[in-house]
Length: 135
Image (cartoon, rainbow, N blue to C red; front, side, top):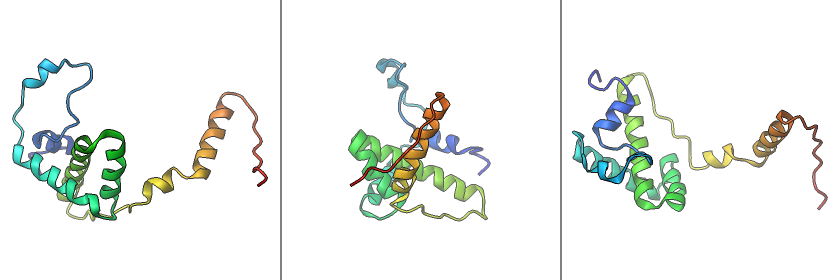
């Protein structure tokens, strides 16, 4: 792994980056670079294969597809898979642990949102008391 000192170098070599920056003109996109086209294709196929699985990348693909569209979501998940591969190859002691399909739901749960909003209101100098609504 000395050829790729960081995960970003492997992603760049695989042409699996996030695309052109918004501030860059579309005409400048014509430059292709020296990445490996085959690696990009393999990442896209691996990402597409996760769509029907109950794994974190599969859930991420479905969640991003709703927001970004199928192609951009597939590129984003392919990039994530490539980063995971880099970390697994860079450290022989590393083991992959899937976060599971419900990870985003757990992270964005109701109690977490309440705490976040209370913290923001407190930072604005407001004292807030929360009472549950009567059903």
